[in-house]
Length: 303
Image (cartoon, rainbow, N blue to C red; front, side):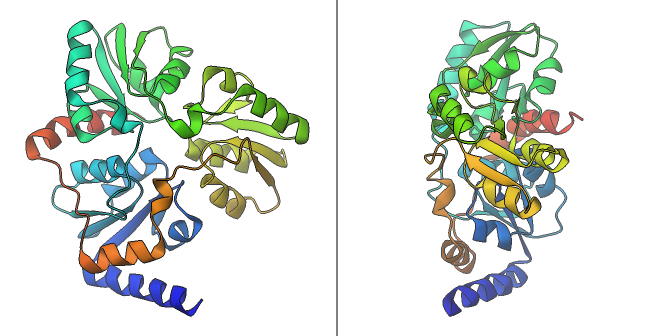
């Protein structure tokens, strides 16, 4: 316990030395969320990183998130809490692959999920998150939309737009492996609970849910709901905030396997070491950054 207290104290000292702000995604470990200045989903953190008064942004998350912070903050130092924290979904498509798909569908506008590399964002017309995907797609003049890289989120958006959606076959393994049978079993075990899932889940899982929501939308939904119990279909890290903000309500996972191993790579000790050594600096080549920033700015402009 003493060691943990010392680590927290050291992180506080390093924040002052670096004039740093710590931001953490909703899927991070509870202790990392607790020590962060801001906790949120991809869209909230992208906005927050443009508004902070700090020389250094320490990002508790995965690489594409820290890249987005670097894209928006070229004059600040961005440190990724754990240098090896990547995103298998983001890695499913390369800029070369996207260029090939663009040649195949020359009339399509490219909408890329924010869960993608800076190189993919640079090849896209607009970015989106799970919270504003429908608005982003509908904001584009083109009738044809090439959506990358998450096919499940793309399919969910296709049910709420008249656009012709062309879906790249990528997926998030945490959400993609959830099965309808697991949802049905969870509902049998907790018949009074509302089912809330992430739109990265397969369509047949979403069909059994009361709502498909981003993590920030889940938090708002639960807070406003008169229901007392909820079955959650997203990465288990969200349970920490749900329970903190709703101590009288109950939460159950659809499956015990809802864990992103990359999100869990960041511990307080790892965070302190990264700040101590000023390591895992995330940079984006300026030519790529400027192109990617156009797509991200268009996303952030959506109300």
